[in-house]
View (cartoon, rainbow, N blue to C red):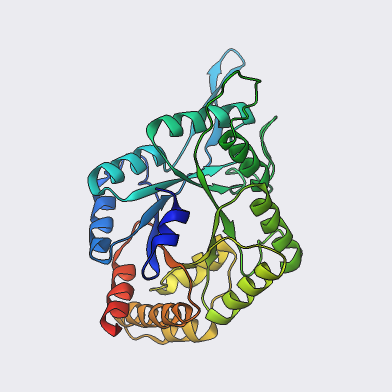
Amino acid sequence: MHITELIARRKQPLVSIEITPPEKGRSISELFGSVDQLLPFKPTFITVTYHQQRIVYEDVGAGLTRKIPRRKNPGTVGICAAIYNRYKIETVPHIICGGFDRYETEDALIDLQYLGFANLFVLRGDPAPGQKEFVPEPAGHRFASELTAQIAAMNRGHYLEELDNAVPTDFCIGVAGYPEKHYEAPNLADDLRHLKAKVDAGADYIISQMVFAARPFREFVDRARAIGIKVPIIPGIKPVTNARQLVTIPREFHVDLPEELVGRITRAATPADAARAGVEFATRLCRDLLKQDVPGLHFYTMGKGRATAEVLRALNDER
C-alpha cells in the first residue's frame, strides 16, 4: 500500500522507522532484534538506507589494475524483502543518484516493481567515499529532483526508450526535507525551492532530516506550505543517548543540537543517566510535535531500537 494511503487512513499519527543494513559479514539477526523491540508500537513502514559503493583499484601486475567496487553496508533490497516476509510491514528502500546512470536506475526500478515494492524514498546521496563533492555518473542524476522525475515518468509509462504499450510502474515517492537546510544550500529559502522542485517532479510525501526542536519544524512546514508544497511532511526523530553522539551526529548529518540536550548529556553522572536524559528530551520533543498534528513520527534508529522503544513507550503511557 502506498505511504500516502496509509497516512490518509490513519486514525492517529503513524510511527515509522529507518534502519541501516548490517555491515558486510554481520548477521541480520541483530537487525531483527531491533525491529522486534519496536513491534509493540505497530510501525507502519520501515525505510532502509542505501550507501554508495567505494571504488578501489588493485594492482594485478604488468602495469595493470583491476577496478573493485566495495560497499560497507550492502543488502538494502534484501533487507526490505526479509523484513516484509518476516513482519508483513511495508518496507521502503532508499534510491540514490550516486553510482547509477539513468539506464541502470531504470533497470533497478523495474526490478523493484517486479518484486512488488510500492514505495521508494529518493535521495541524491552523499559524495562517494573519498570525494569531497557529489559527482554524478555520466548520464546520471545530479539532483534528487531529476531522479524523482524519472520515477514519476515511469509511473506514467514513459521509459528512456520509446516502447509500445509500456506498462506504467506504480511507485509512491518520498523525498527528504531539511528544516535547518541542506548543508550545501546557501540558505533555507533556496533549499525550500529545491524541495518544491522535488514535489513538482512527482514526490508524494516528505520525511524531514532529524529535528531537535518543535518550533523550527513548525516554521519549516509553514514556509513549505507558503510556497505551494502541499504533500504530507513527517518529522524525523533521533534520540541522542550518549556523549559520542554529540560529536558524530552534527558532523555526519549537519544538524545543530540544542544546548539543553548537550548540557544534560554532558552533565550525566553515568551512561545510564545520559541515555535517560536523551530519551526524556526526545519524548518531550515528540509530544510537542504531536500537538502540531503531524501525520506521523519517523525514527532514525540506525539499527538500534532500544531508545526509540523507550520514547514510544513513554508516549503511550501518557495517552
